[in-house]
Each structure stands twice: as structure tokens, then as C-alpha cells.
Image (tube, rainbow, N blue to C red; front, side, top):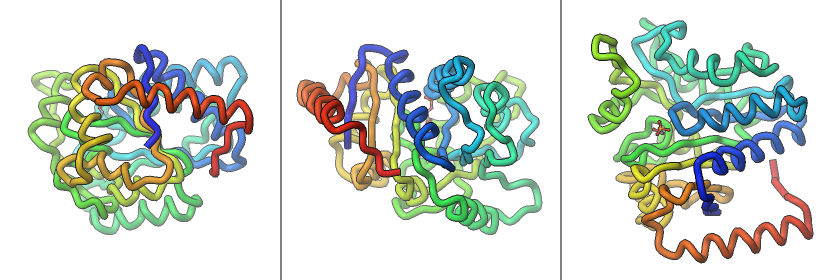
Length: 268
Ligand code: PGA
């Protein structure tokens, strides 16, 4: 795991935006894995700015989102489709026909829909770079604690903690879905690179469990310990419970030196 610690959340977003920009600029038909939630909003703002400045284009990008709520339509303002349109897709030149979320409408068989999403990812050539946030309970996507580390796209029942963490985004009289379709942990681990962003003190315990805790379904993000190319970008608050912060800062300096000498090498 490559752990990179920045002073603040803006630097985390800037760094994540550089990873995305590098992928979509260098690769002919890039496949991006996208995430929703509060954390990646500043990443998407950076990407929109880069697009407006003519530095990047999403013309040839295909995207797959981690998850989508069940029980609301995509035109509902709480849907993750709506979130992606508002925060990124409406502001850049991505072909919306090549942007996918794991949906399962009323009457559709969730098992078939899950398999279909996996097939679509495979047919697109697999995900080059998967963006991730982390729940305060260690979830990635909506893979809640005790999710199988071998899981694939399927329905998950959200935990009380996730429901209460996300209730801030719903007004009291609004329907808050309790079920979602989510990529599985094995689906996420198949991505060539994963980039997990975490900011704020409330993520510090989950970050510690992910980076230095046991590999365990109790902290789904700990599965990233098994990934060859997992990058974790943190602000100081999210890194605050990590032991050995000096080591990560030192290792990052060494990596930057190697990159300066040999150029960035990403095996997309
Ligand atoms: P947040 O969610 O960015 O809104 O904190 C992260 C997550 O639940 O994955």
C-alpha cells in the first residue's frame, strides 16, 4: 500500500485529480471506476477545472460507478446517477452512454443485474483506476463490515451506522434507501489501480484498521492490503491514528525521487 499524507483535503483532491488526469491522457480507451460521497466532490471539482482549462478530455473514457441505491429512480435527486451528473458528467465531455452504475430497477433480478455489471466491466477491458472513499466503519463501495472479501456486484443491506452517517444528506420527510447495489470487494480488487481518498478525523480509525489492522471482513477496506497497486491519499486528520507517519512521508519522498529519475510508470 502506498500511503501519501497531505496537509489538507484540497491537496488530497489535487493529487487524486493528477492520477485521473494521467490515466485519461495517456491511455487510449481509459476505464475509470468512480465513487460518490462527500470526499470525491473536490476531486470532481478539480477534474472539471482541468477540463475547462483544456488540460484533459473524457471523450474516450468509460466509467463504472461503485454503487447505486435501490428503490429510487435515476432522476431522483438522491440517486448516485444524479450525483454523478451534477458533480462531473454534466460539466465535462464524457459520453454519458459510456457511464454506468450498478442499477436494479423494480422487477429486475438483482443476481442477473449483478452478473451483467461484472460482464460489462470485463467487456470494457476492466477498470484501470478505481476511485474509493472509505466509510467510518471501513466500508468500500457499500461493502459493509462482514462482506465477503470475494464478493461481486450484488445487493447489500446498509448498516445502521452507514444509514445514520448518510442521513445528513436526506431531509426528515425524504425516503432514505436501506438497500443498494454495489460492486463487490473482489470486483474492486480486480481494478489495475485503486486510489482511496480519506479526509477528516472521523475516518482516522477506519484508515488505521485498513492500513495496519488485520486483513478482515470486519474492515472491508483492509482487503486493499492484497492489492498490488493500492494508493491511499490522506489528509493529516485522517492519518492521525497511523503509527509511523514519518515512514510514509519519507517513503513518499523516495518514490518522488524515483519518479523524477525514471518517469512515472503506471501499468494501465
Ligand atoms: P463520504 O463517504 O465521502 O461521504 O464520507 C465515503 C464512503 O462511505 O465511502
